[in-house]
Length: 263
Image 1 (cartoon, rainbow, N blue to C red):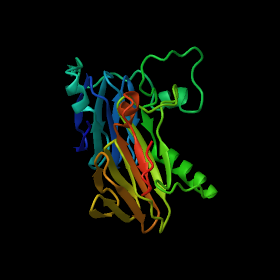
Image 2 (cartoon, rainbow, N blue to C red):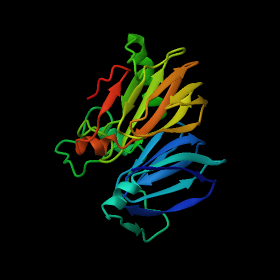
Image 3 (cartoon, rainbow, N blue to C red):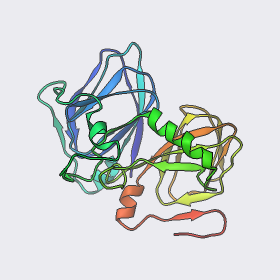
Image 4 (spheres, one colour):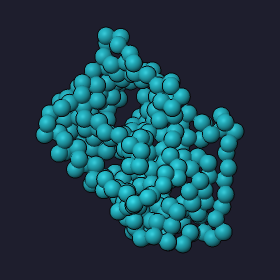
């Protein structure tokens, strides 16, 4: 239902402005100085940032940095193809004009407030940049309570601040922290999930396979496949899945531990 890939942009390069039916996200693996512009607002990239390009939003990418920038792309291409609803349009110029300063959407919607009388124009988040430093600080403050979920450690979902729901209609995104020497209980769910390691070292047990985890590694947990994690040191993971779409279709379910309990 989802595609994942890596994209690299070099100093001075520009990916021409366009828009399409597919929802997309970008999680920055390494590099600084590159940017994504969405509907006239630029978001500059730092390692660990999450950047969204909701469906049919004009967007382009460029780099003003001194070295390469690499990000993990996630798109709902297979879902859109299933409905035969794919559209792609190119902008009349290589780059769209900047009509809002960087950080404008975060100022409007990212501080538990929104503009008076703002209307819900679509079901994607009006905030399209979720900086690493913000969610990492949140994880550190929350860990003080020692409220570790047996299957996830400490796990947060990125939200659309207008609705409290997932950031996009078909894609949900998450970040989680496992403290040093923490091992999760077995878990499985119907949403196939793509993970990347933000920080730390550990192991992933996916079905009958075991994988060593180090920063920037990427792995996939297929739908309804048993899965657990071991953290050798503090382990931070970013992930995304089609849970958003499955919940809307009343298809999503999970099983926690070995007791057969599902919901």
